[in-house]
Image 1: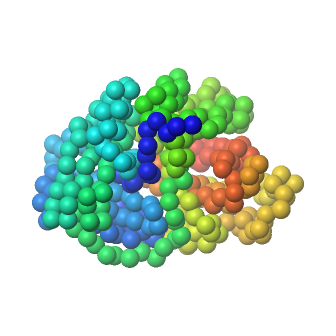
Image 2 (image 1 turned 90 degrees about the horizontal axis):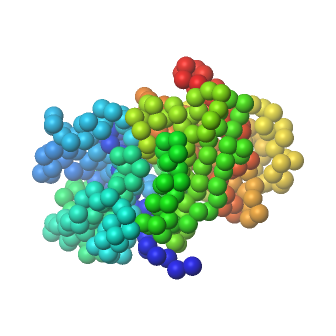
Amino acid sequence: MADTFPIRCVDHVRFLVGNARASAYYYHKVFGFDIVGYDGLETGLKHEVDWLLRQGNVRFLFTAPSRPGHPLNEQLNRSGDGVMDVAFEVDDVDWAFEAAVARGAKPAKQPWTMRDDRGEVRLAAIHTYGDTIHTFLNRDKFSGGFLPGFQDRDLRGHSTGLLEVDHVVGNVELGQMNVWVKFYEQVLGFTQLISFDDKDISTEYTALMSKVMSNGNGKVKFPINEPAEGKKKSQIDEYLEFYGGAGVQHIALLTDDIIRTVTELRNRGIEFLQVPKAYYDLLPDRVGKIDEAISELEDLGILVDRDDEGYLLQIFTKPVTDRPTLFYEIIERKGAKSFGKGNFKALFEAIEREQAIRGTL
């Protein structure tokens, strides 16, 4: 099929946070990111502070308002720390923006150009679910590392082996999943890879529905979740309550050595969801032969699932903010292109145990 909206890749994920310096230090020390750029009062940016981090092809940008009255303060107060922008690198920013708006996207920022002595970068932005936006950018005429105005930094982290963003998951309100599926189909030319209903993703108490959208070149994958009826409050309901609406629930980060990555992260204080021992007793019959020792996977709490093209290994952190909202998935793909359907029940039960501890189930 023709790619009706060319996107090169997820260029970066931008977070709105209360303290960008502290967030940068946390991701540097715990996740092993390099701190590679800074923009703030000292560089002429008078209303906010930006810290840029990188590991492999993953770029995280942390933004914090630096003055009272900043327009982002209201969003920060409502939602707490979270993802505000999933930015795309594109061939032609003006075409991307005009095409998206013509297809029904709500403009967030008209095309503009940033310049310094290293060249120029063209940008524009549209709205998606909640307060989240997608920025389009092209830096083909820029010799610097990120954006004009940024001061290079070179504070190397101890890498945990993270390579790139595998997928970004959004939570939306009841009845809104298909609205946003249609948005990504019509506006950005995505197609639906797979869907899961409440029979696939449920326990005795809670359920959700999900559809996975992918762009034309397959490099950008966005599962979209909505709550489904259950006896108790689902993880999606909990997220929507504490975030104040729709937003990015988790980011899946790809590694080629999940055992090493998870070991490093655990040693640095990251807490992961855990599943019962019975999960690993049944694993050999369910997934067949794998390269890893099941005992080692059990010790670390890593989950395994298989599809027609291979298998994957995955694990999920507990929330990394004070609110039970944003968390991370660490994933290694051994040929599999799926999303771990066979792990949904065990994962949901683990999340429900954490919800019960928080008193929000």
